[in-house]
Length: 276
Length: 301
Image (cartoon, rainbow over all chains, first blue to last red; front, side, top):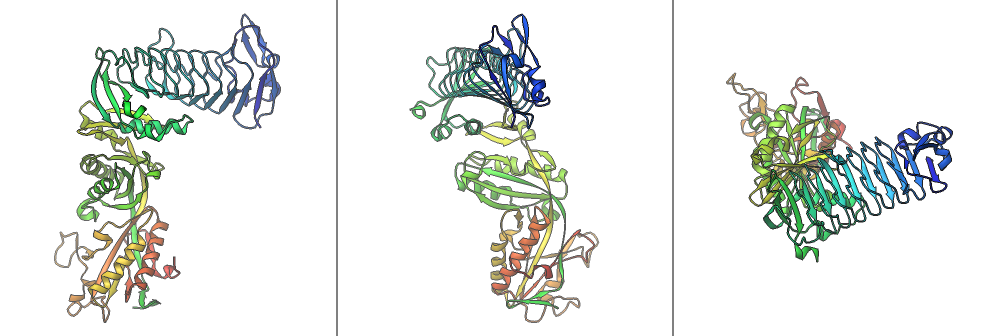
């Protein structure tokens, strides 16, 4: 058994939950976990005042449950272990993660997986803006790891991304891959407007036709099977997204751009007959 | 020749001598099994002996679509060389010239648990002249090399394992058809996971010895002791009465156990298929650290 924290009542203010990482909690006993301080607005509360603490130190698994929308930074900076969250979360979930597995059975706010460097972040619901992106003013976003979102993603997913994979089962909002350096953003439900603006070497993948065609990108070829994308689609299926065999075996159109940048980036758009 | 009888064959009381080699396993996939086979045959061509070809390679087995990284039909090939440096050159040569050039192929690392790696896509990417792109998928880096029909996908590196090279079995019978039938039966039984039989059809007609009787510069010459036509004029001939043809099967394997069990399968299959004498080649135990006594292979597989 592992440590399980269940939120008692709605907290009086937003909480910085970043101290609640599996490796930290499981290095302590349940009494010490209950004494951990958490910033709550302008005050500090202990974990025990906010959560019911169950279980004991056994492995590197931590479970959080309840309505966690006022908790920000859940799993931020995780380096290992497993964190499972039941319920919706606030902002910065898994931000700066370097390892481990973080699974959220619900939706998350903005900046989830922001500047993440490793590990796997699974989100069962929708994600807010700047998923896997960079913080405002920062040049590089995610530099490694994998993010899988079963629902939709907000604006500017993968903004500034340098490496890694962001996969969205639904639709990615406007501005996906903004100023992307490299890495891959896959949106099985399609990309919003203005995708890939400022993209240098990144790959954006739209599982639905794009209308109008991407701006500042040049059409290269269609009816083509990118072998790396096949591997990536298999990978995200293994991570829990529903990806049909027809999509994996399907053909794609490649647009190269951003033409005002290096022109080494790409937007892959599923061929229309494949998406039907 | 003393030893034991196995079916209708006399098995010599001797051993096969083998030596350590480094190996890589490449998984070649393609749109169809036919194209994967074309690439695999080309990549393992002219790779019978390190003496003349700098490496030894063979198709290990075919892989159904469900067993390959990209879900397409594939072929696993094993490539052996004397050291990692030599192996790295051969991997680049063969993947670059035979796999990348073959329509629809991709090439993956089939030995990810190797104790070291050599470059594959990491070097081949330069063929892309700056247009290469990489993707890290599930922690493994791949290179996308633009080619005339799309992209060639190749793993960044390939794992290097410590294997065994030069295991062997010598199959003899009354005449050439009988010896060949027995050798072919042995080869069919010996092929399998972890095994490469690098010679044409798995069988060697021109078995060799180290050095020469007539020259100090030749590294290998015909094994005159096992040549039936020389039996009457060679004082140290090892060809027994009633033997008209001899074939050798050379075995490279990913482990000592793999070679041993491969030899066991071959020994019993050859005996059942009409071989009259079965033996093995060695160098008195001085050359290789792996010895496979035929007496240890008496029990059926």
